Length: 238
Image (cartoon, rainbow, N blue to C red):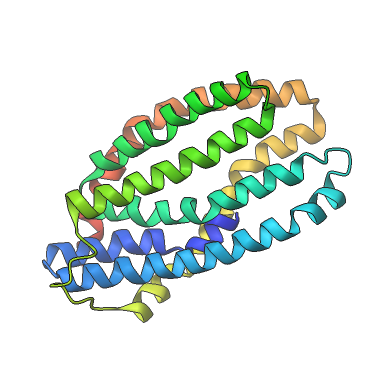
């Protein structure tokens, strides 16, 4: 939820406005949108990360008094928060510029493969759930850096000094901010079934349900893939 709030709905705003600017070949406005979004998201997500890091002991003592190890896990996740938020900028920039293949490379190589390898390594070293959380954080950091490299080197150079940034901050925020509530609502809806089932049934039933649901959602692979391809085209239509 913190990462969703930190993004401020700018992930969707990036797709809309960069798609429009790309169609107009307005490189200055593309650069301004990327710079404003990345700086804003990094500042807010870093603030949330520091807050989570500092409050991790209090959260553990208040809500999980019998699991003191959660405090350290929260600290590890706090480190991942800014990188997780910045991923939204790079991923949606690639989508808007219709270079989604680089996002797939970063997610498959940077997250899935690296996360699995590190998780197996750390668990075999006896680190348990802490090792899994460290593997998660390192894979997020690696994936975020890989996405930035793809954007900078293969798609659109943000550091190109010959392109002067043109900002449309007010319009971008006006469009994006209301979408934060939409994203939070989606998170609540997606979690509500497990929470309700957990209230009426035991943990084993919830576990079986959460294994079955992702399998059922495989039917969404193709429409989701098509959405990623066509959304920038739709967004560019005024």
